[in-house]
Image 1 (cartoon, rainbow, N blue to C red):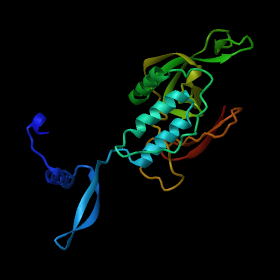
Image 2 (image 1 turned 90 degrees about the vertical axis):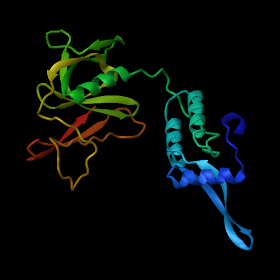
Image 3 (image 1 turned 30 degrees about the vertical axis):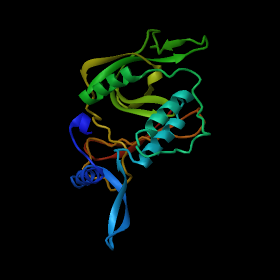
Image 4 (image 1 turned 60 degrees about the vertical axis):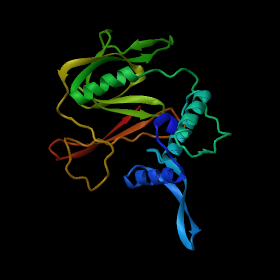
Length: 254
């Protein structure tokens, strides 16, 4: 310290400076044990450490999320080790024998689409896109109009749902009503200048069943099933009209 910073320090000055940092409100903590000096009990400060923003419980929750993800096992291990190093004190997650199951294929990058949908939702603008499906030839096709032309959809984004390894968009259709669109089946997504529909203008998840006050335009509560089955799913939408007159339940099965 003296050679590098020109500061002379000793054992007492280090402890005194750390105590001043703690008294000033910085997240510096230690373990104190009693000791006898001149016949009196005097606290001895040991094991000083900087208490990080993430507590041990927070780190454990993040590491659990990694092991329940479908990332490659080596990537999970590397990220878990980086998280554990956030703590100055030794941190043992107890998962030496735990291995996650990676996904069969490489996960698609939906960040650009999510960013566009977020811009549309926050800016109250519509989007257009083609909604695709797979046919007997194993190839992906746009949805079609009765005339045989590709159907270009225009909707007002409300909410993006992340569930069961998929992203889904809840949006209000131009003709009215709410529909669910999975992002992996949306193609050629574009942001329009048209303003979003004002029938339903703000999504507020989640909403408690009772005792809600100061409601915005409407309430939207979304619940999706959990479990291994992927045959079907269910979204429950509790909608309150903008004039706070009626509440109705809309069920969408996919």
